[in-house]
Amino acid sequence: MFRLAYKPVLKASVLTAGVGACAYLYVKPANALTEAEHGLHAPNYPWTQNGLTSTFDHQSIRRGYQVYREVCSTCHSLDFVKWLDLVGVSHTSSEARAMAAEFEYDDEPDDEGNPRKRPGKLLDKMPAPYPNEQAARAANQGALPPDLSLMTKARHNGVNYVFALLTGYPEEPPAGAQVASGMNYNPYFPGGGIGMARVLYDDLVEYEDGTPATTSQMAKDVTTFLNWSASPEQDDRKRMGLKALIVIATMFGLSIAVKQYKWANIWTRKVVWKGPGSPKQ
Amino acid sequence: MLRATQRAPYAQQAISKCFARSFATKYDRPVGGSSDFQVPDFKDDLNPAKNGSSTKRNLSYFMIGSFGLATAISARHAVQDFLTTMSASKDVLAMAKVEVDLANVPTGKNLVVKWRGKPVFVRHRSDAEIKEANSVDISTLRDPQTDSERVKDPHWLVMIGICTHLGCVPIGDSGDYDGWYCPCHGSHYDISGRIRKGPAPTNLEIPEYTLDGTTLTVG
Amino acid sequence: MSKIYNILFRRNSVFISAIFGAAFFVDIGFNSAVDKYFDYVNQGKQWKDIKHNYIKSGEDEE
Image (tube, rainbow over the protein chains, first blue to last red):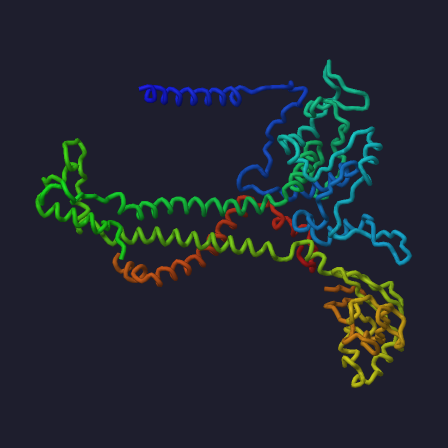
């Protein structure tokens, strides 16, 4: 009697406790920090690459590279991108070769062991602005400009965050905001104080394709470029994913039909007992 | 052959027996007691006019066939994608060719280029050197080759700078034949890179290259 | 209907070869159809849509 009575009760209470715990943990958000402390949450911008089947706007990647080269690259490195990667994405092979050749790279030592320099090749990585972390910190009042190759993956709300940060510098910090000296106020940056000052101003670069270089246009282009550098496989992935989804969905439907067919015998089987005790025929 | 409505033989036998007697039999309910369990009626299933039609059969086969088709396509792509991971990657392909501008290599000088991790010797030969390379009686050579077989433009000799004996890198402008000399075991190569003296078995190897004006592309 | 059955499904060898034969053509057709749709949706955005602006005449692609 006891067993019968207590089992369903135990089950029900465990279930209730589980659902309750989940609801407590996930439905009611727990905030350790205020909005100002962890940074304002960036809004969702309508990126052209949003969506299951949307590729990058490669013209925008090309402009974004220009913004990176002329503005960002004075402080930020792009270690995981090679010149080669631009080929067939935003630049032609000869353009990429020419751009690479403008930079000097370490060559193998000559016969006397003296270090030599050579012009860049397609296989070289994007040159870094500082030789090492110490040099970077020394040049930026102790702040380290992070590598941007994977930045849109490395920050919460990636592309939206980068765009909001670049365009989110107010004219002057709001009343009551604490900004240390040498720091700049940006509501999207955790804590509000960021080492980087506002860098994008209207007409800072001159686009070769004639696009008006507004602050938001440059921010959009460079963010698209950084999104590409973080996930260069995105276009192919979406193309492949579309095909895979169609094939797998079709196979799912077909597998149900085939299963029905194969199980028809089992479902419609009638078992008759003909041994002792069965009715006389 | 399979049929969509086929019964297991045992069940079929039992059902036909059941029909032979009449529909109201003791098989209508489970053996040994009363129950509200209703034994299903198989009348329609057993009627060939209503069942086992070729349309339904074809549909079933079509479904199985389409499933096999989709599986075959997926399998092909799985195998192909796996195999493409073994092919040369982009950086290897970019490494595969080396472009060199020969405009500022003076006559009678050597240039060493790295190509796929190997040194490539490029020599800007003078007319006297070309003459010397062509004056050799090739029947006396260990690895008989005329000079014209070894160059595309007689002024430019391009070859892989690895001794064919044991893989050392020969030294230029030296040796008994004014060509290359391998310091490891004393192989002498002439001005066409042919083996003349020493242990090396064959001439210095010639890589794939194209010469377009003063632009040399190795690979 | 039983004609289809007799031609295509009666012999297993015919059935299997038909499946593989059809798979070859369906694969090509499906790929090109999806690619076409994908390029249509992303008109003007991909590199192949803009590269004619940057490739000088007589130059190799990419």
